[in-house]
Length: 559
Ligand SMILES: Cc1ncc(COP(=O)(O)O)c(C=O)c1O
Image 1 (cartoon, rainbow, N blue to C red):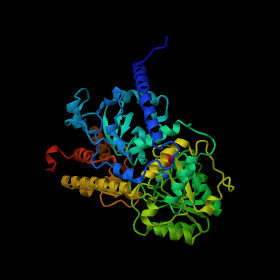
Image 2: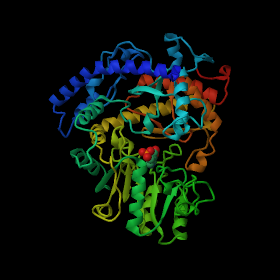
Image 3: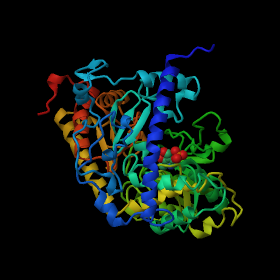
């Protein structure tokens, strides 16, 4: 007889409990759907009025549900934060302080090792899952950064997520600044997006034929981005960038593209090109499997350095199809374009008959509804979108000038297709997301992120380490670089003290704050981050930063 491991036994017991809960919730879900339909949900093209959205933006952060509440089968509605007012309870029940394991310790003292007065997160179940995952999946993960390879330790496995909070399978709570790397403007599981997906799923999950949701979402994209006259939906940002560059090459009959060192455009071959100094004119494969002949078609320039771009054009006259850029770089950490940089790229591209492609997979709908191009007033020829566009479901898109997009099949000869493209669930989530992005959302994001930035700066100053740090922020994305003197490009970013970053990461994690487990990523602020989350985050940050720089507690000058 096959031996049943403890892990499998535990998994089966959990599955049985989940099944019982699912049955209990089925009635609830049916009720939700029925009431949504009654209020015009089914088939109505505008699920929310902007006024309802503004009214729903919580002034006070809603209560985060205590771990275990959902074990009763009751959805933690009071934990929801997002575009739907119904989800936000004003009569807040006393509940666990979000994340902050220091405080959680007094409520749940069982287990865990103490570290300078902080309980180590429990990791038994995550450990077991990771062990098993590593025997089934490369690195045990579906995307490399999730493995904690660059910070060490065991990644936690998420059990569920609500508002600004993640809860892992071991019951640890985290205030989340990863936010799925960008899509979740309203935090996790906003009620109106869940409701839209529930309604959509009841009509089928994929058709292989056009659906109304695609037209409605395309209409919203085109009316939000003046530079996008036609849009094609795909399933990821990688696919969007890969397809857009194919179009740029076809439209210009040129092969070379320029990207910037430290910018990321997904993992298509053309973009996996090493970005180190000395290779500005020479593509070098950044991954085995990318043929050098293909990598050599990608030229790398320095972010914020127009001369580096101009000299590539001088060296490769009439051969460069496009300049591809994250208008605000967010994949070398957040790096802002210097004044005139994006305008300069527009001029250089025009001068040389090349296209300007903005990869707004992160910045689109985040820095402003119309993305970085709205914020900085520069009009690209082509734009890539993703993340927020899908409201947390897998979507990408590329679009731009009508004459360019007319070259895409079936209108034109440039082939690109997708089985799940325009997926009805993703279209439904995207529609609610975009309709919910009213000006008050950006005001709130700006206010929260500004407070977070100021708090982090003050702590660095009080600890006497401000000159060893750089904090870059625009809107709701920010990065704390462990290097002083400013970060304007990837060379600057690479001077970061990665050991200090690791200590900071783990110090935050111990205290229930989750930032990306890699130094060159952004922190994402959502509308679900409120005063209580900020206070808990800054408290954790103060201790974690002291640990990062190995400042003894007696040396901490925090009053
Ligand atoms: C700017 C940018 N472009 C493209 C991508 C690739 O998107 P995806 O991971 O959906 O393939 C990313 C992913 O983080 C990104 O940040």
